[in-house]
Amino acid sequence: MSSLLRTVLVLVMAGWVAVVGAGPAAADEGDLVKVFVVTDASQTLPAIAAGTLGDQRRAGEIFELNRGRPQPDGAALATADEPLHPGWILRLPQDASGPDVKQARETAGQPQNQDPNQDQASGTTVSFSLAAALAIVAALLLALITAAILSRRQVAAGARRIVHAVREPGRRRRRLAARRVLAERFAADGESVRRAYDTAGEAAAAAPGQEGLVHAIQLDRSGASVWLTAADELTTPWQQADSTRWHRTADNSWRGAGLPELSTACLVRAGADAAGEAVFVDLSRLDGVLSVTGDQRVARDVVQNVLGEVARLRPGTPVMVFPSTDGAAPLVVPAGLEVVPLKETPMARTVTGSHGPLRGVAERGPVGGLIVVAGTPDARQIGALTALCGSRGAGWTGLVCGDAGTSAHWRWHAGPDGTVEIPVLGVELTVPALSVPA
Image (cartoon, rainbow, N blue to C red; front, side, top):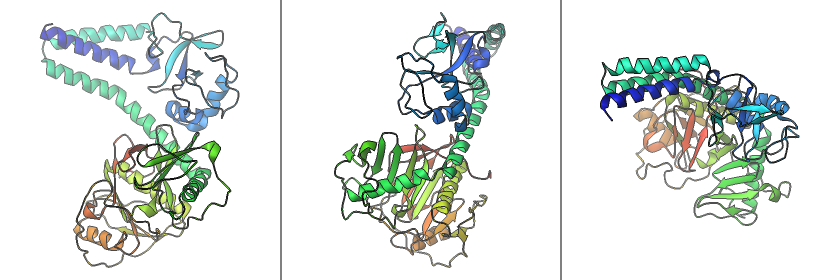
């Protein structure tokens, strides 16, 4: 294949992706309807509404469109909260969008994959209007003209920029909308917090004398999971899922069976997993300083969310705000937390050792107060964090939007797509969108 022909093909494919990637508007409207194909039994109507409509509160619209509608397995959706079955095809409102939105032709009241151009592997109907066909022809002509005067590398790079410019803004808007919905859900959901503390109590009851062994908790429809250190273990009904994670089913809950009181635990929601379920971490197990590196705006969202969680859980908690030394805008301290003056602290000795995602073995200690750093701390601030936080400090817990150096005990990494990676747990979570733009 000649270099010119390969260049032409690159641009043709770029035009194709730009047209198809623009979404359902490129499809022939006709009797096509927008649908969502259920692939996992853990998917819920609110999660589908958040991902395709940008608002989990529109789950009721999806339910009304599908109530009593026969599904491929012969079942039908009867209530809004019943489990969804893999293979079900749920009809969506016409303003739905996103990579999970498919198109199908409706026959006898039920979306059917009957179009001869149907991609059977993905369930996406390939159908083009006249405008779409003309756009593809125009892309082909543009490719032929451009390929005659530009090199293959220049053409390919330009095509990638065009495709990115067409598709990326919409993806970012949908992602941000879903993160804002998640923030609203966290603010209104007190039940999951109660369930998390019950779960921590159940784990403590299954390991007498080890009240503080739980580092993190995940709640889902099937039950709950907890993260321990590799040396810890639980008894029945808990089952070991991997080296540090244990799971129990919902049918074996001990709730109300005289659970131990967890006076030291401080469980906050760090974000939501791929299924939209909250994952809690215990701030009392941070042993001092949480350092969130990576994308600065998302890192600020991580810390802002933790502050909001503590404000709801423990109002009146004192907060010291270290001034920014790198020009970062200050974080907003939520109402309910008490801002206190900075303490004068001497430079602490440098702590040596491993600087991985978890430094040494964290020791459990009550969260008596928070220190907030909006940007990367300087050497003096790192010394103050070491002196004030952790088992060797004065009992404060540090929340840093940047690299806290040797003072960090937990290290998380924020991604530009609104996620945070927690290496010590082996999870990546979606972060609520909360912070004021810098």
